[in-house]
Length: 143
Image (cartoon, rainbow, N blue to C red; front, side, top):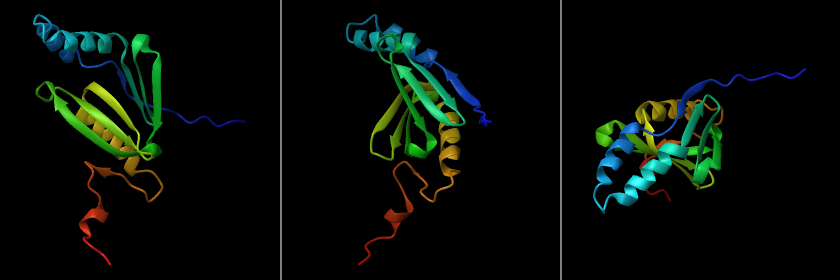
């Protein structure tokens, strides 16, 4: 008999609608046209799925690129607010040094808090730091 572990969804959906609206308005200028194309591609094919067990991002052309990360692989979370703080960009730095970028993430502050709670509650003593600051950097020079 197998035991199933329940996975609760915290956020499932696409990028922020405000990102698309602002970039469509910028598209009326020649300079803003590349940003508009990027926002349309994100709106059509980028999807986030953040659950109690993992973070999944599907995107790229026609949504064919998929990335899944479990919380034990995340060492750091970095966020940058966009759209006057209505949405933001988030980068998950993984333990192997690679990065998973999530652009135009709605409710990014709530998502950041949720992810930090999950990675800090893992059973190992290897707890991640926020914004690149950890306890070992404050010890100074030790001989």
